[in-house]
Image (tube, rainbow over all chains, first blue to last red):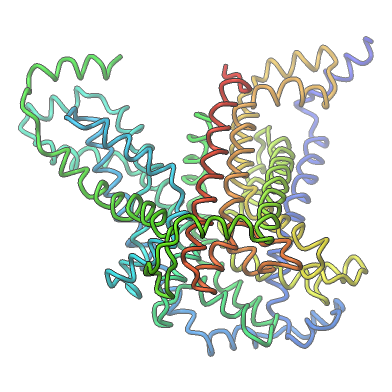
Length: 287
Length: 297
């Protein structure tokens, strides 16, 4: 019994360096195994389709690396236009969503007015209706009001996010009311207080919401597919799906297309990771 | 408390209602009315008609669309696939996320490296992920090459749904991992240390300490993934479509196929409502169970 206890105290071993290093290496290997599909997809995007359609040996892969797949993708598919379209869609959705969320959150956090609860409950009720349920009817609607093949039509469904409004409201509630009162006494109007004081204070929340929104809008598939029927308006995801759907099933092209379409959000993730994770962690505490 | 007193002190001063909050909220209210509530009710309305290829209502048919959908032999298959997929995603994501979160409890110097690896697929879209997976699972793909098997993974009835689930779990595990990590890190170090001194095994420590303390997060993650699985379309679409003998023809896939491929909008609208009912029911169950199962500290 004593011996066991001693062992476990040793388990705590804070200065046990070799044990720590071993733990680190094991975790690193698990991490590498986990992302290996992506790494392999990257490597094989430089292998010709002919090689990919046989069981490739290691030497053959190494000796036959080629840029042909990428050349084909950039030549046949206007992928840069598609990336541009995706980025414009993201820019519109993110800016409108952040502004509207700020406005609503400010109204909820700083004002008392008739029908406040009604509007609040309306937003809660809207959150109960998932986007997938209204997609078909929205598609018919967007056709009727002439928003097909427009950036506005592609982004309009991303303008309002209940989560965004509530996160922002939560943050605004932490801003002391006295701050507003004293500004008002100093002659600052309600709107000016929002624009000059509240919004600049919200930059960290904006960053967390913007990065999350960027990844989800850039990666959105079904809605842009429905709205952007004209090839000039296609997004990256639509272009990618078309490569996969094409008759020949050329895996070299498919992989090169996949990797090209992944680059932008991957870097966005790596640079914005801190904000993205802090946003999720905040949600997790509430459970 | 602060808010209460602040509001109380504000009220008597300004009796008249300011117009500003209404202006601030107007765009959101209008957008919700136009793009959430109106389509929702229009969707219900359309289920009682036969629609043409543009989605315009024609003849009124009462509940016949519902009867047709529910008596169609493929409906049972669709629901079976939907539930099977939900269970696979729920169990798969939770297990993997728990494993990863358990590995990352201690913050060390380099832990950000493998933590980033575990969350990385979050950034990747379903379409390219599906595209890469399609190669890996192909006849001459790496999975067959490494395992020495020769299986048509994506077109075999027994394997297709597992492949789709595996890829979906891979792409979704990051968020659940982060949630659970927050939960596991709520466990105080003193508690862990005293359990070590008492001689609790790693196994016991996990089930008796970490899991109960992280129970709100575990609970949330289970439902999050089940609800997400009902709306996961792109990976299925790129990887297998409706799959061999419709084994991956889940509700959301049937919904979009009816709308986009067959232009049967009234059928798609019936499926939309079934999807809504399903998500609504699961959310209700979540709220009810939350009170009973989860003990918040």
